[in-house]
Image (cartoon, rainbow, N blue to C red):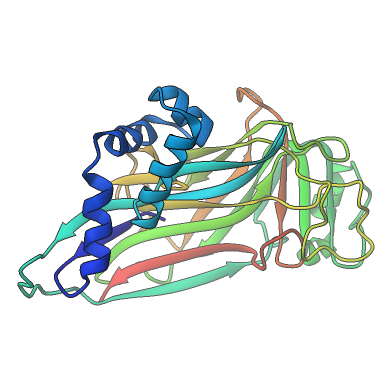
Length: 312
């Protein structure tokens, strides 16, 4: 989620770090390159883009990271982990002379949706569902997705299609909704696992396509932190934690703007629920399937989470 950076004289070290980061034309070029990118760039790509030695580019990236302007996330690559850089700051507010400003009070409501509590589904083989104690239903049978025990699901996978979740809209009458955020752990779906298996994972809000996340692989080779003991080492192990943020400025996938559809256009304040669909389109550029993880699988102790941030 992107954040606003506030600068004032009461935090001289923070302010100096930001000013230092912005004082270099090279670092400004790096920021511009990241803003133009679709899913972040690794340091090698940045170095090539702005025609710098790799070591020099890495030093500039470190300065930007220390200032809180970008963040770096490690992702599996063909030759080990890659460090992917992306924009972290939404804007910078400078109150150097400490003029007081009224800060609106904000509150947040969080909804934790169990993985198996989907409202609707349409999936294609290969597919399956598993819980903490074993498979649910028959593997590679779409009928398993209608098994009553699906409420115990901790990992689901399918080649294409979607799962739809419906979150309660209890905050519809709140004075002002500022932001709606979703987070979930996902990766591609390959036979067994394959760290180089791309897939385009789409997300729809209230029937509107809000974002597409590019997964680089179906990750394995290193056991997922929360996987139960019965789960084989030769299968998918973990995913990446993805974030979709919706505000008055539009939709943002892991900090990258993907759509001008905002809170009003998506009609999130209307009706009794908010629909979230996650899946892979049959006509996507990379139809590499999807794994979705619950709180007892993968590397993140969470289900599918929706957070509503509002004023008052």
